Structures are given as structure tokens and as C-alpha cells.
Image 1: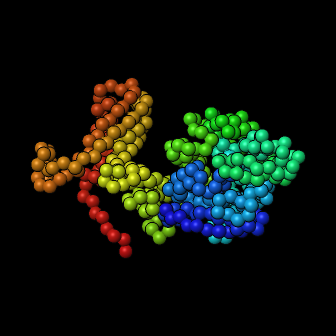
Image 2: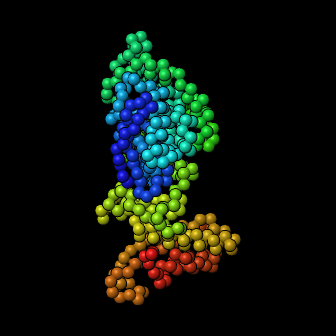
Image 3: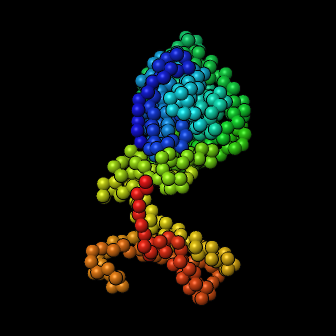
Length: 400
């Protein structure tokens, strides 16, 4: 994974600051992440969700709205409408510099912004809103004590997120006159709503309102136990994993360029010294080494994947045989453990020196079977193709 700092012109002509996260190999798709009200592109949720998506093959641009973080402009001169314009400008930039933006992700007010902008970006196939308010005027609660002063005096200094900002009457008028429900209803994009039931900043009823207004395809996922800001790493990681799995339906993983057609490809992900993104057709997963050998434990180890191949093959082979025989098998589970042992300690091995690989297999077969049927299934498990491959002569050659 590579991170680069970029700038581009926002909807109001200001220079906006952003970071692009590039995955290993060809991106599955390009996504844009919009941060919460008065947050920034470097907020906990923005960084963790963006990087988790990148680890799964997405290219992501996260950026600061005008007047926030490292972007130009002054916060008091911005409105929700200008934020929406900035999302559209970010999409224009991604389209010209990277590729068509297919996925919009927004957190809190950023979620409302991407919902409003989606209809203006033809490339977008899907939108994910995290903890988003249904009514943009909801953000008034962030400076409720100053609303009267803003209405009468035109401006007020308010504390937001531990910082002092100037809020103008124009912002109030703008957020009170947003046709958000009509936009959501007419969006015509796949929609994923993620919201924490215990969100104390933007209540769960907002997710209900957005869901009811949207047309299908639409989905809701509860971020149970999370707070509004996804402060815990595991909550941000879960949100990213859900978004990735959901978006894959609309943005399949492309075949890796420059490799044998139909091959499985492993490319360094840049996430740790050994972390690799493994791709097989439209599917992807992370592979890594455990922490105790210097890895980041971001995925199964190569030997774990090999053991998984054997386990899955045995399970599938038994299921195929049981179905063909019309035997009543309710559930099959296969556990495989890999070890390296000294040949001298292996009584039934032909090799007498060095170490050998041992795969210990445990089978669980549930169903209405007699002893003979159960024994036959166990025997059939030993005939699965991966088992046979591991037990036969194997050649590994470099392609020309």
C-alpha cells in the first residue's frame, strides 16, 4: 500500500488537500472518503476505514473539505452545499488522475454529503454512509447554544471538537433548506447504511429515515457496540470489511495484469514486511506471517492457506459423494493442522533425515449415517484432489 499527498481544486475554487491510498496491483475500484463535521482526512475513522479498504484492493482518496485541515479557504465561508461541491470536485480529480470513482463513503456529515453528491457523479455505482444524519439541519445540535446569536448577529464563535470555529448565518440557512430526502429517494445507486444503535451523536432513527427514503438495492448493517467516531480500531476494521464485501458485488476484483490467465496472484500489500494481497479471479484475501516471526498477522500464513486448501477440498469431496449417494449428511467440518517434524521421530515415514511436513486431519460428520457409510466418507476424503496432489510427485517451474 502506498500513500501519497495530493492537492486539487475544490468546488469553490480553493485548493483542497488529500491523501491517496494505492493498493498493490490494479485497484478493484476507486473510492472517495468524506470526513465528519469539523473532522479531517486524518481522523481515526477516515484513516482506518480507508486503509482497510486499500488492503482489500480499493484505491481511496480521503480529503479535507474547504476550510478544514490542510485545505485552503475559511471554515466560516463554507456551507453544506459547498461540501457537496467539494465531493463532486474530488470525484472529478480521481477520474482524471486515477480512474472512474465507483464508490463514495461518508462518515457523519460526510455521509450526508456523499448522499447528496451521488446523483451528480455518473461513475458512482455504490454509496456507503456511516453514522449519517437524515436531516442535514441535525448539525445545529453541535452549536445549539449559539443558534440565537448566529440568527441575530450573523455570526458566532463556537467550540467544535475542541477547536474554535466561526459559524455564520449562511450555514444555518443552507442546512435548513436541503432537499435531502428527495436526493436519497432519487439517487438510484446501491446504498449501504452503517450505524451504531448506541450512537449518542447521530441517533439510530436517522438510519431508519434514510433507509425508508432510499430505493432498492439498499442494505443496513448495525455497528453494534461502536461509538459515533469509530474510536475503537476493531469497529473501523469491521465497517471497512462490511463495505468491502458489499461493494464487491458491484465492483468485482479485476484480473491481475501481467500474470498467467487463471493463476492465483500474490502481491506485496505494503502493509507490513510480509503482508501480501492474494487474488484469485474476482476473490481476494490477505496473507501474512504471525507476529512472532516478524509479520503483522494480517491474514493466514502460506502454510495456513495450504492447510485450508486441503481442509476445504476434503469437505467438498465428501459433500459431493454424500449428495450423489443421497445420504443424509447434515454438516461436515474438517480441521487440518500443519507441523514440521524430525524424520527420525516419524515411525511411518520413508524419509529418515531432516524434517518432513505432517498434516493432521480431524473430520466431523453429522447426520443419520451407519458405521459403514461413515467409514466410506472418511475413505473418500482421502481421495480429494488436493490430498492426491500433496501425496504425488509435484513440479514447480518458472514461466517463460
